[in-house]
Image (cartoon, rainbow, N blue to C red; front, side, top):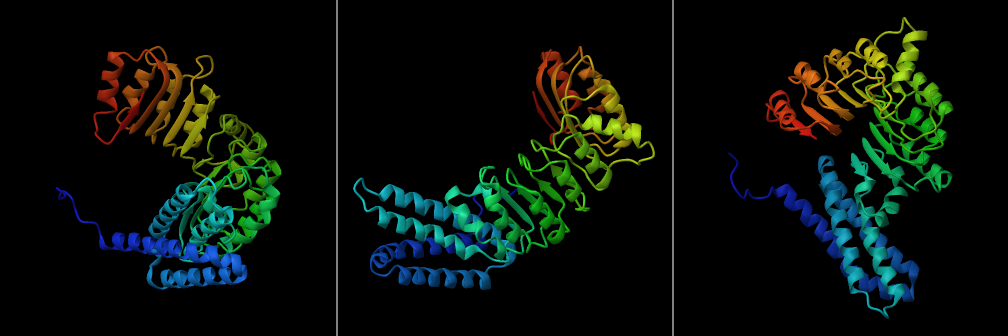
Amino acid sequence: MPKVRQPEKLENLALKNSAEWLCVTGEKMMPMMSEATKLDHKLAIEKLNTIIEISHDLFERFVPFYLYKPLTDEVIKGISKLVDKCKEAIEFKANIAKFLAQINVALSLAQALISIKLRVIDFDQMPKMLRSAFYIQLTKMSGLEWLSLGSVSGGWKTFDMEQMLVDGLSNMSHLLHLCLNYDCTDKVLETLVKSCPRLMSLDITNSKNINNSSVDILVDLKNLRAVQLYRTSVTMEGYINILLHLPELRDVGRYDEIGRCLEYINDYYPTYGNFKLETFVSNHATTKQIQILCEKCLNIKSISLFHNVLFLDLMTIIGLNELNKLKLLSCDFFADQIRDVLEVKGCNITTLNLEHVDEIDMNALIYIHFTVLSRPQNACAV
């Protein structure tokens, strides 16, 4: 048994104190910067940049690469608190120029973290005020392996941001995962093909500029294991192209017509071998499509289905031998044979999610408990 109130690790204390030191240094510089800005703006900027460069060199020299992510998290927390402190201290008749100078100092501290040692960065987890400081420094983060750029401009300034993204991604030869919602373009995909050959996961959800012609570029990323194209302009033709030309693909995200794609390939490419898909998400699946899934996708581990009693017989999913995550929407526990499915597959199911499922009475709950929840590591949501 672990001891109660374990002391914090020395490396965690060192990271917290390093982040605190950087923020305290920035806070001490704020009055000086406010006064210097009135006299000589260029000199004030030079002093600030000198302090940031010294901090950057210290982190670069003494912080190992595997601690850069927790250091980044601590510094971002500290900068957020510093910005909030500046906002709380401002008075009704305060000098706006002085306030902006203080905020500029706080946000500039983030530049001390820019390094090739960074392996993981998630823009969704940082305040929006800080993101621009990292966006403009993407070219200096060539060591990244996992990058989530979030929504960038939210689709409003896609082509204004394009060159910045291209310049940054062109240096990231080690990149394995990229999330770029709303603002992905063909030019960005071409850059990924040239500069990021090891890319395994790509999420470009909501990027309206991505269409079937973009897929011709996308399929050159032969190491892709997962691609998310939900709410893009890619149609059934594009998904068929992806399935045929990316043999290592495990996950295509949510696409309601993915079953029709498999049915088309089964009819018109009868000699094509099996797929390595592990996830299947569709609201329009039919019995025939699930049967094809059982024959062509032997590695399916997770499935999410919207049940339509006119088109889908749930008993067909018992042919998925590797299935361990099951999500069903809009059906009846007994009438639609969920009970029978659990009787056959319950011993393999580790995660069960039943949404808008009727006939969940005490008998159903008891049955779920003994078939799925008999093992403590399993989970169920009803």
